Length: 30
Image 1 (cartoon, rainbow, N blue to C red):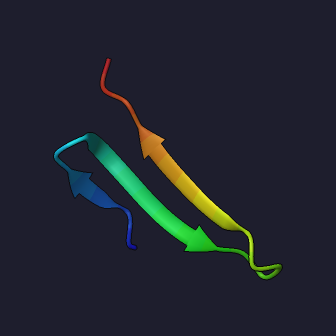
Image 2: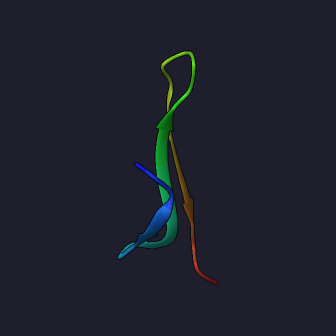
């Protein structure tokens, strides 16, 4: 999932690293 703006977060993205670990990253407003 590309980093983008969603209803629940101004910036959110999801990726897999080279070991197959899933990472979710988000930014909260404030």
